[in-house]
Length: 297
Ligand SMILES: Nc1ncnc2c1ncn2[C@@H]1O[C@H](COP(=O)(O)OP(=O)(O)OP(=O)(O)O)[C@@H](O)[C@H]1O
Image (tube, rainbow, N blue to C red; front, side, top):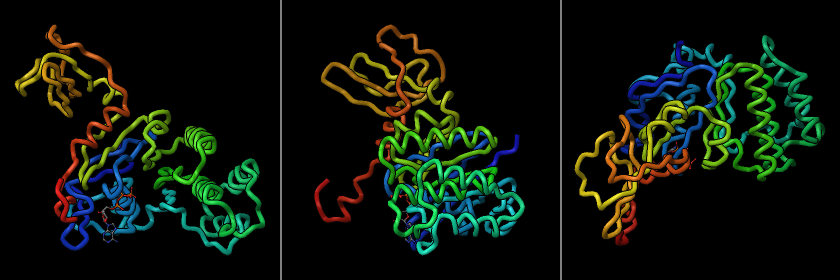
């Protein structure tokens, strides 16, 4: 099956600094994918490259097999909600739905947008600039869903929502995309939320992809090992140690496996997706910024 989104050694630079570097990944159709990484990791940069708002400085990005920067037609199949959900603030929600219908004549689901906003109790006749941040996020999502996109890209869609609204938002998002058979890529810092709804993962840290693949494969391919203090030598069944912590006598390792770990010296435990992601995020930690700030690391 052709990937919906595919990048090959994709890079974007601002001045001398790479915001995204050597990014190679693919997103198969029908997935709900989480794009995870700390502040400044390159998540928004990747999403902007994916929808042709930025031009790559290295490598390639393909959306349904086409370059989104050079072939804007491909964007008819894409819904994108940028961070902070930019909307025309003087327009009411009802006016935005009407405008959406005019701009997307071929495939606009007017009823979907209106039903959704009515259900959420969003006032139709108030300028969206006077709605709360969470209500604005809901308006932006309703507009993106009404486009019936084959791919929906959401940059931190739940950041402004309260916990209950967040849960409802993610549940209704899953319902809507399951009905439509769309693919979703959403960035977020809220790992527990993502674990519940996503079946595909992309972890970015310091401008690079640290981990990507189906959640079930990632879960099957990582384990926590607890055993005698580890000197860094090979352990049967372990492809890589992602993170290690030690006491005088004991080591706790989060490892990527390439087979069963049968050495009886090690107690082998399953590891949550959240802990796996955190281990990969810690892997890229850098002390360069201490130097830049002129303080000791
Ligand atoms: N317009 C810009 N000019 C210069 N540098 C930029 C610009 N936009 C982003 N950057 C830099 O690129 C890097 C990646 O930024 P990006 O916004 O993609 O990160 P992010 O993962 O989305 O972060 P956050 O979680 O904080 O939204 C950061 O170091 C940022 O400072």
